Length: 117
Length: 113
Image (tube, rainbow over all chains, first blue to last red; front, top):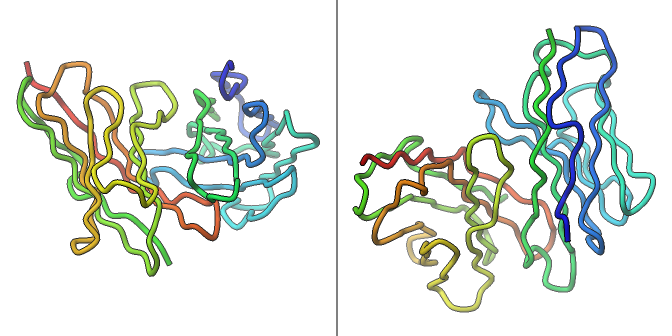
């Protein structure tokens, strides 16, 4: 298995531009998570999906952020318009939510380093 | 509510010395506990996990952790540090009723040659 695949690895964009981050979870996993990591705030859960349905988006900072999961093998996180304070590393993770909930742990992607100038 | 607290944001050890990274959890029910490692410019990798089986859990790269309910702790140890162990380590907790993980703030481990 290729693991969780995120693209792009690095993104540099100008303030005000739309940014789309992509994630392909591990095949067979039914839960997908988007995290943001910064020095100041550490790891923050933005949103997570279970069976392609958004379960908790309370971590999404504001309306500029949106996430979709149109099918089990693809998810996007979009920022529109982007601002310098959005600069961070964005991680996608997937897991299998089974009878033993939380038993399997997450598998993380390598992250997208976003810089908004 | 559940959470984890990692004591010490930075830990330095000499190569060959014992590694001890501390994690305490807060949970009203028995939790599932995890340690993750993050190398520079990489995502988080699972080191080990506790899921209510044996209280002493062995993970990859020689790391292990012991679940101590009386102390609400899940400290990570390694008998002899190697230069390649230098990384950021995160403790995480999740509950049996949900799949959301709660991560600690991380501990940066430096190994001194």
